[in-house]
Image 1 (tube, rainbow, N blue to C red):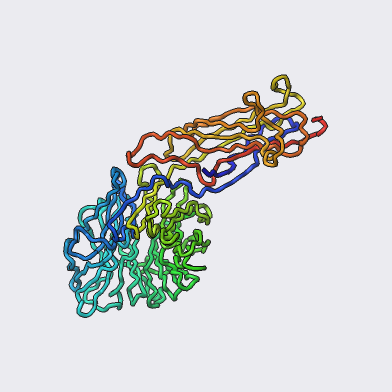
Image 2: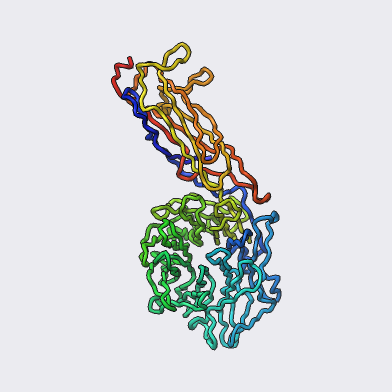
Length: 627
């Protein structure tokens, strides 16, 4: 197991008289762990009907104490609408008490008719409507769920025009009972295909805030596209000002949408992508003003055909109360469609600063950035984290990458790359959809759900508890080598005590862990294959390192003291003597299990924190005293 290395704290200085050896803690060593705290040994895999695109969209949902994985299968047949040709379906998969990993179709209450009346000049056609193409959850406790079918058609004027308006359902948090329909592009007596909202295909992308339902409508105005924003409280729609949006046909504005606090922590703004705008793609941020959406920011893609703006994610990366924006360009190419994600940090009032690019592994045809999802603070460091999908990586097996927010914005090196084939060779298009930010197993850490729709599969990956270990080395500030204080057999020797103390902390951790450690003396000499100037004694033998293990209770410091001896006739009194402690997790005790088919997960050491510290003895003084 790889271990991270970081100095946790400086040694404590003691005010003693000045002699030849001075002790201070100055050594630092760092290594990075790329598996970190996502558990890979116990994936929970749900399977749907064959060839149904089960997993095209995924959503983590909770109501009271029940956790569900909701799954869109837009090419599925429906048991509740058997007379409709492959309308698609939304499935619910219970997380706890479901050892068979079964999923059941949700009844959206639309009956068993291929046609449905929906207005004065509206007759809905549900054949091949792609229900479940997008899923979103209302951003509040016990929130509702949004499920959309962007290929739903109004066929009232079928002798002249079939109008693919798109259809969405608002589903109660219980996932039962009456649903609420939304057909945002329907208008009485409008019958022209392409003109205005006739072919808008609303719901191809959607997001659900506490009060707003945001639906992308890329087919409006002859595929210029638009955004449909519905206020649940006031029962009103907001629309972009036409003069704010460059009106270029086939721009597909609304192909990707999100919402966040871009201008102020107290205001919700809407962002929308137009991935075909002038070939390079474009993204807009709109502020709600009256019944209008007013543009406050725009950015354009830098490569033709990159599909910049096809995926968007609003997330507060640096914990400043403002939402930052990640923009996917999954067809960005150096060789072929490696993909790229642009990061924009919010400065308030619609000012967005381009802060860098994310590229994953730059894998051939990966489509990195096809999906971007805020997954919550999975490692409990106080900053939000992000998952980015690359569903065509590894020859369509797919992969996801985990990135961590920090005070500067985002750490541009991922902490985890997880390929679909590492879970199962059968997975295809793993990473097309990702959901997160919900603690699905009750261990206090949000978990990640990933769709692999070409294999009709969904994978729930749980987060492991994260341990922060604080290690201290306590050494005397000075050693008087003119007065030997120790006996080692018949010899009178100079010696001193080296004490190490360890304590661990974190959220919802096991009550007790075992920490294995190794204390090594004069590390620099050993690394150069030179004899050590300091040693320990074990069973009568001189050794330069000691290994041990301590059982630790959470938040309770435990210490161990060792006697270090200075060899006689030390010649090198100028080079610092380094003491080093390397440590790793051993056994742990987990109190209780929430569910017998969800095994408790082992904790891990915090990324970029602790597995090695060291202290140096600086040798100074009059060399003749050593002869």
